[in-house]
Amino acid sequence: MSKGSKPVSSHVRGSGDFVFDMRALGKRPGEFRDEKRTASAPDGLGSGLVLVPAGGDVALDLRFEAVSEGVLVTGSAVAPLTGECARCLDPLTSTIEVSFQELYRYLPDPGEDASDGEERFLDGDYLDFEPAFRDAVVLALPLSPLCREDCPGLCAECGAKLADVGSDHGHGDKVDPRWGLLAKLEINDRVED
Ligand SMILES: [Zn+2]
Ligand SMILES: [Zn+2]
Image (tube, rainbow, N blue to C red; front, side, top):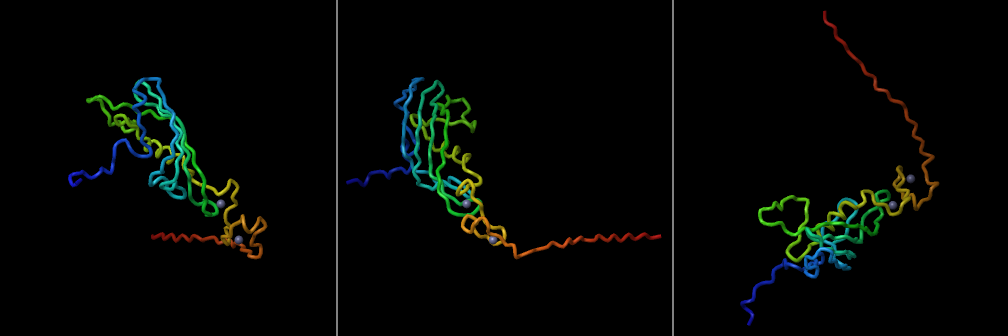
């Protein structure tokens, strides 16, 4: 009977798509390992018009190299991207590629300040690459994604998609002469004797 078995922890150290086991490097500077892996994209990557869909396949191509302070990670990742064209608002799918050069340091000795904030640290024998991946993707997301480089966008008058209606689309019949309306500024100066 297994009534005494403990529930499995939801956060198992050393597991996870972005966690890599560094034991093979043995903390020997110069030693390296290349790893290719397909990982599941984490939640919440992206904002506004574009995002990396959670669970999408992220192709990781990484080299882990032992250096004296820790492990240097170089390589690249390619992730799917979905969003909306900033000009014509059509849905778009694309990919984003980011490259890395990240130093993960061994945990500092007791007494040494680890709360620098900017630095990344190994967790024992494991390296969690997700924070580095996340930061790189957020920086690389396009601010104005386009369905294609020369997307003509929408007609400012009627909202028609110019790619569909053609370049001769226009509203020539609707002349809108602008009468110069000049606001007259009346200044009432009251001079009191
Ligand atoms: Zn477009
Ligand atoms: Zn129009």
